[in-house]
Image 1: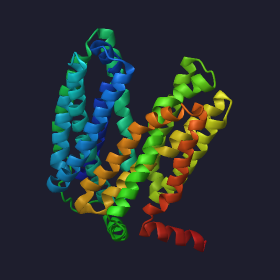
Image 2 (image 1 turned 180 degrees about the vertical axis):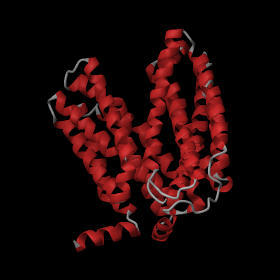
Image 3 (image 1 turned 45 degrees about the vertical axis):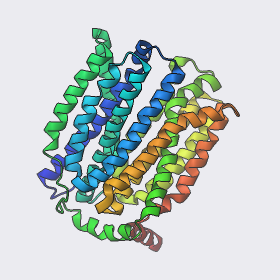
Length: 404
């Protein structure tokens, strides 16, 4: 607990949680309705894959636009605007009756989602700076909560016989109300120092800023691409691995992704406290190393129970990596936090989309479990390169440890 933290700062943190849950709910509502929309439009899986690339393209463009706008206008203005637009755009993919209009709808929805993603992360950086201690990972954990909310809503709507368009419109309308109600508690563009941790944060900021720069930001972005490529691969290939390689029944194989997602969510809920003790660099280094052990176990094990353990380790290891990279990008230069977060998030999003495709391509050359060796390699590289996150406080912590 942080003593002396103002009520307004606590309210801003709660509002940030709300925005992350909303973003996860909006995206999750689209995802759970993909099968129904695919059937209504009458497209193949291959065509759907191409259309999903437009969703990613729109998100990437939106991230770059929102990053610059956030630096100019502030997250307090851009995040609510993006939230309203993204909520309103949710209904668009539920309306088309042909591939061309669906393509346009996904491009627009992706753009709005990218704007919301970057602006809410930029505001999360502001909140973290004001608290003076790590709080970013918990925000990312609540994004997953939004996906659970979307699944529950979709299940209830299906039982009630509601169409995807009706459900998406209802969720979008509720999202607009949520955004507008929460907007008033967001932090101003240049927040005053708040909370007991402000002095500590002021001491930590100069070493980070001195090491900031375009090259460092792009290195953070490349690391985000590698980590999120691993996450994307797990999303699409974990269940298929148990089914096709280990011969597990479909009902059992489905728990592979569930195991990965559960440990990732739990890990993100715990990471902030751990990062406050051992530092962001250690979270990235040891987290990536644990993930490497996990996915290697998956690739080599002939036993289902060991594969489950491997997917659990993979999710736990990856859980804290992306929040540390986003946080480092946002703190590197406060005057360009939005642009820096957009670069890291944008390239990371490319990795998330590319992961399933890269593993799929490799399966034309080697068995699926052998293709996972690429993920091991990416995790090892990330672990080795984690020194990019070293700050003055990390060096002080290492000196204190060596003196004992």
